[in-house]
Length: 416
Image (cartoon, rainbow, N blue to C red; front, side, top):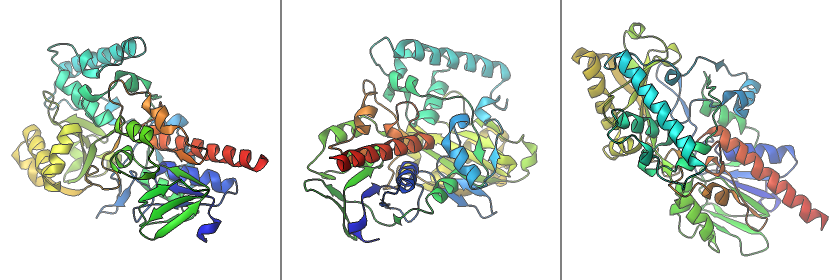
């Protein structure tokens, strides 16, 4: 496709970019996805481990699966949907966490979330940490849960944004991989990989999208970059778009990393069960045992704990996990686990984090980030979603919305 034939350029080939490209292609619009990575999928990424299992280093759960559009995509691709309830919907193993303590923790956590809901829509927007019970026994563990949900601790989270999240409570998985499903959805689209966009010049009649491989011209552009990239890329837009930069800065990406471990004699544990490494601190991992029944452990690290480990390299995650598992199961357990793979999302130059949250007082920045500019620049990505942020289906929905905005602007122009 010659550059002069391109009507719309989509910057970023993650869930939002692929959804936008699919919608535009179906409408007969000549579009091109320009992606910095050597692959599609963005923060959704499936790899195959040495044993042949597909594992998701990025998003892995079809949240709100009963209304998640990626379910239909997976079914189109004849992927296998696993409807086993997620481990966080079941009781943790009582190792290091007696049943009585678990029940007390869950009661306190539910009361905390209820306080957020009660206060979010009526009171001034505050940090969620302000609603913890002063001196509460379970505050540290509730804070750890927040890092798994949002990638950040409660003192950084807007209660209004947190409460805006819409979740049906139905969570499924794709056996062959969520990332693989998202990437395959883009197979029929025009894509330019290994091509990071450096600047978008919107001064002239046609937009100029500057890349290391040259400048691509287009009538319209959909930007689906993570907020961290938009917030930290000075001069990305010419002329600058300070409102977009500010919105992106107020919607930073939290951090969650997954370490996959192989596990010998895995049958000792219940399939798809979970435990906390510790229950008296925020800096703890949670361990998903035998995901899909496989002889593995999926260790999950969030917030500052993940950031501190990233700073010390990939081995730090394994050492931390082994230390916690040995505390729970004894010193011989260290011989039963080996590292398979981890991806440090904050260190990833094209992500710089995992998914977005709003800082206190800034929940409305999602709408500001999503707003089109001059009928030519459109924005999508999970951070643009009011209620489905931090999810791949939030990316899909905002991508489709941006594509619809392009079509509306295009039809309006053609009628003039």
